[in-house]
Image (cartoon, rainbow, N blue to C red):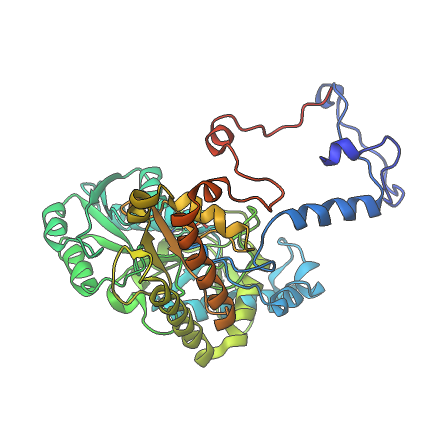
Length: 475
Ligand SMILES: *Cc1c(COP(=O)(O)O)cnc(C)c1O
């Protein structure tokens, strides 16, 4: 039942203090003509409503959530505790710098740590998400070429194993996209890359480990090819879970990077809640970073970089998300950060190896933080698709892995356990995957019906995408 249907006139809770300043009403032309529909419920009804909704969905706190590429990792409670401190919540972005020195120190320290982890020289915390960071990073690349009077560079090279946001961001930044195919082994085809580069190459966008979960062995050669033709290298570091504290994109030859704090750095993810996509760059690009930057000094202050591309978001980005990410980095420390990465890689390899006698792996080699299987053979044999297996998992309290992505793998399921999952949890998931494989052979019809235990069962996903109902129809 929707909240509007539970609403009863006059039942609303409204405990605003009395007005102690002269009332100023908007002019008649600005007033709305129809009644504003706000649900009216008592506090307990409201509380129950949202608890009921929470019970109907599946989150990281409900069970295993191996959503590849998305890194649905546990959000430690201490992050929330820090982000709830009044010293962080009861401030105003227009407060003079000398009154918020602690907050500026949070920004500065987070920047420093993220630079250290990525091997970059400067960082902006302003972008609000990964794709927003990509767009920002590409504007830095554009500003760099333009500042040198180099107007011929109109193309961004994007391997076909890239995240879908990469070509979209390049197009948003006004570039044309050159897609290059991956080799059989999932890595960038160096010959194709050499053919594609030239004086019109502005840069390359690369995800490494790539979207099939593999670390590209030719990474140094790739960045060298781009640099030797005058282009810059962009590292999609949305998911740094396999490499943080182990290897640094800056050392691989990358000039610009974005990170998703809502993936690798354990801040809440999903539900469209606030994210954060910091962008790091090498020293020669720092002059173009979005404003405002925190200047070092006896007293911390804010400044605008001299050739700044301008603001990409108001003020300092999603500040409380940065507080959470900094808490995570300080909790783990210099030893804990690489350990988290190594455990993420270990967990993914453990699951892959426990499943590969039944399920066909798209690439049969050591994976990074995630692995991709293809259900093509199973589908040919039994008619059971990646979608059916994904739906079947739901009946066992497991969120489906990423489905039908990356696009270069047919009937793909992309599994990313993350580092905090115990062996018991993974063993349970492995046994469910194995049981579903059996079921695909013995009772495929039943699996086509899954899930049967969830609040909503098999949905018309095409219908939902084509004809979304996003607004409540008031009488
Ligand atoms: C998630 C992801 C993105 C996009 O990040 P958003 O915060 O969803 O905009 C980009 N690249 C990769 C590799 C990702 O996994």
